[in-house]
Length: 346
Image 1 (cartoon, rainbow, N blue to C red):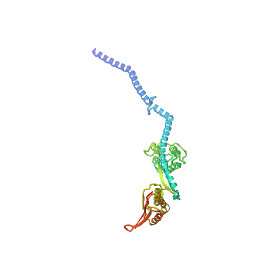
Image 2 (cartoon, helix red, strand yellow; image 1 turned 30 degrees about the vertical axis):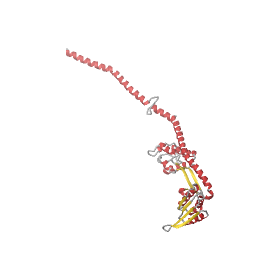
Image 3 (cartoon, rainbow, N blue to C red; image 1 turned 90 degrees about the vertical axis):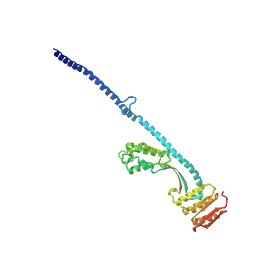
Image 4 (cartoon, rainbow, N blue to C red; image 1 turned 30 degrees about the horizontal axis):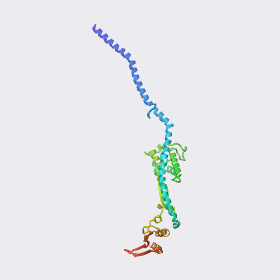
């Protein structure tokens, strides 16, 4: 009897557990559903992003970024370009201010040259001051460009030729309008294809894809609008030739004549072997004239080694009262020549 009751109790307990399990399953499933729903809702909210301040990698953030591409960024880009141009023009103005200083000096020297024009004759001395374009610009610019990439500057020779053609459009590197028109043309060539041989002229190009290696577009624009390739020049010229283009004789003559023409001191002046690196024409036609002009206000002592110059200077000196000359043997058999003045320098 007891055994039968125990068996019945166990069966009832098992039936109860089964009923509890069957009745509690919907509630558990519902709870699991609520948990899953919360996880899904939270993830959806995370992916959609906040409506007011969405982060960049959310749906709202991407939608806002797309909207910015159409509305905000064009205005920002334009204002940034305007600011870049303002700063660049300020840099350009600073460079031109240096040339204005040189031009002020040049005008003073031009006046002195004009006063001496009678003595200079056809000997055309001039000062050139201004901004000078450095041809190294072509190499420096192309260091930023991958000339294998599709774009205006594709190809070693073709890209260089186009760049040179654009820069050659500047006839005066001190002309602000001309310089900035050329810079705009170069920038346009980076963003649209200017090659003549392509089927779609002015096709849009991605400037970022044209950069070489690790070089950045910002570095390129910093170089382009920073004007490191423009330097101030202040050249002394004769017969339209720079000092670097003159022979040693021409250069020596020009510098000595230029000094004698501009120097206004009355202290004695000693010129040792003035004929060194001078050609005869410079000495006879120009230098002697300026030495004669200079010794009207100062004592001039010359120690020439060239015999014809000694005779020329000696005969010139003989006509001036108070000037004497002497020649003597120096050790070693060389000749020593001296011109001296007994007058007080004026």
